[in-house]
Length: 281
Image (cartoon, rainbow, N blue to C red; front, side, top):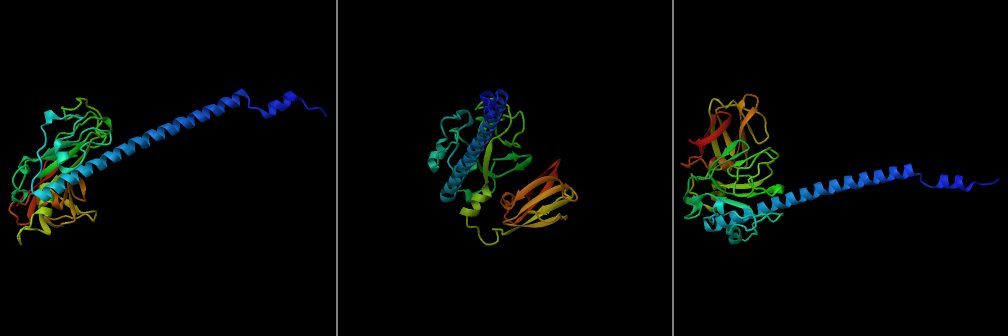
């Protein structure tokens, strides 16, 4: 029997079509892998920036608890993305994110002199995804992955389009991806100040106006009523509609007790349009 060399080569070698298919598959795998690596790299950078903000926030908190006040922040119009606010150096952190962009620090002016234990309120307020937050001590803001600080006094939902409220960095409205940490006055007072018996609250009585038809404590069952007792480790979510529908506010104990100016361990929440707003009682 005689073997044909041509037939043998045909059986053993790739045809041009088979080779092309293999190259296409390899190209797809390489492209897919490159895309995955890019996504993972961005996620890693984002998480590193979150940790940078947390470290900065904790350092500021520790400084306030030790000394009773906070360092002043530089004016908005002096923001420089390449130069961190001197306040961060004072409290012992680097003051920039994982992409080497300077963090933005905002502080309540009432906290830059005197002792925070003497205060009942501050003028620093923000809106966090539609929920007003009052009596804050400070904010720390990072530019996210788009290198663009977009936050002034409103925190938006991640990915919200056409946002840029901070005009001293890039003036470039785009998808929102800022990272924000904030601390209330009461959080600092809780750790620094020794209140006399009867003025420090382990539980807070929260009164609800008639337009708030239901509420939840933590992730518990839906309830209704004109008042609720909130423990120091709990959070309260209020709803406009019965059956815990149409949320109008989510509040922690520390956020609500910051409104207790007369130190009687009582506050109330009233409905204002689609929002629920705390006040002293």
